Length: 155
Image (cartoon, rainbow, N blue to C red; front, side):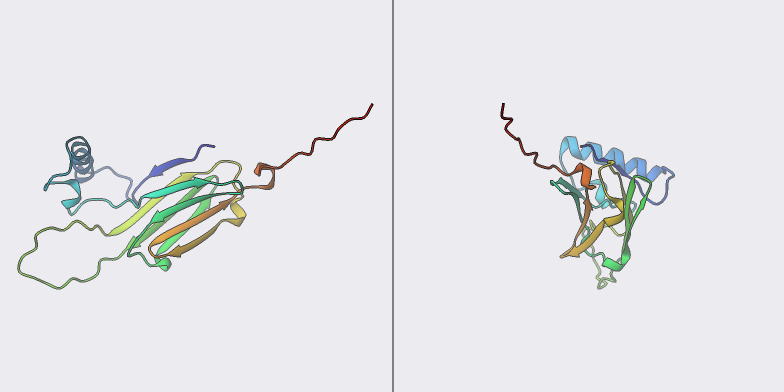
C-alpha cells in the first residue's frame, strides 16, 4: 500500500521568505539546531506532523494540531485526494518589555494525501482528542483480508 503525502500552504507561490526558511531548515537538519533556526522567523510555515497507520480494515491518519479548535479544521475528499486544512489562531499574550524567543507558529495549514483505491471515501470519519486529530479511512470490502476455507476432496 502506498499513501502519497503532499505538503502545501494555502498560498501556492514560493516567496523569498519560504525559500529562505527551507534553506535554513536544511542547514539545521545537517548541522543541528541553533539559535538562528528557521522556526524563529515570523514567516515560518506550520505543517502539523502526522502518523499514517494501516490496519486490516482501515487506514488511520493522526495529526498533531495542538491549540486548534475542532471547528477550525476542514477535511475534504476530491477524487482520490484527502485534504486536511485549518487555522491555528494566535492567542493574545501578555505584553512584556523583553521577549527572548518566539518559536510557536500560527496561521493556516494544509496537508494533502493521495488515497489508494482501497479506501471507502463515503465512510471516512474524524475525531479530535487532546490535540490529536484522527481521520479513519475504512477500506472497501474487497480490500479487506478474508480467510478461505480449505476443503478436503474425497476420492
